[in-house]
Amino acid sequence: MSEKEKMLNGMLYLASDPVLRKEFYDAKRKVRLFNLTAEIDLDRRLDILNSLFKQVGEDAYIEPPFRCDYGYNISIGKKFYANYDCIMIDVTKITIGDYVMFGPRVSLYTAEHPIDASIRRTGLEYGESIHIGNNVWIGGDTVINGGVTIGDSTIIGSGSVVIKDIPSHVIAAGNPCKVIREITSEDCQKWTDLAAKSHQ
Image (tube, rainbow, N blue to C red; front, side):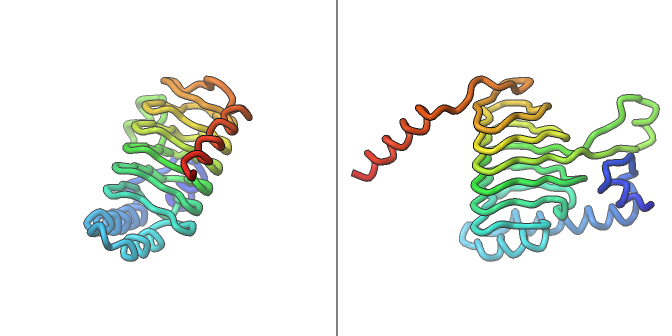
């Protein structure tokens, strides 16, 4: 089994493998070109993202600067929005649903390292995937670690460190991130009423 196959299957692998190094540098070049685009070069940005990511949904938008490792492990849904300084360390799958919003400096880290220091010194590492559902809002400076799933329509408060799964339809925050409360029908009604007033 190749080092790339090991990486993609969540096994211990060597990132120094020549094939992986080439793909890593290819992705870095595309990321550099993306980050150098002018604010009016929206078509160019989208072209680069389509060549970099596994999947890019309709009207997805990432505000430069952005960072990732390989790109081909990242799938983003339609109307995805990421503010400045988003980082996606994608040694394995990162899957993001539709209508997801990231505040500034949101970081997704699929890369993991062995607990045993002697094994860690060999350079072996592994990855655990991240899955984010639809209609999720993640506040700025949040870190999401590998192996985490965030359910649909959930809000993660700014500055959170997410190390465990968070269910759908809740507000969660903290370090470590924990559920604060469910999102209720009263919440939905309040914001529906406010939206209606803004159109009067």
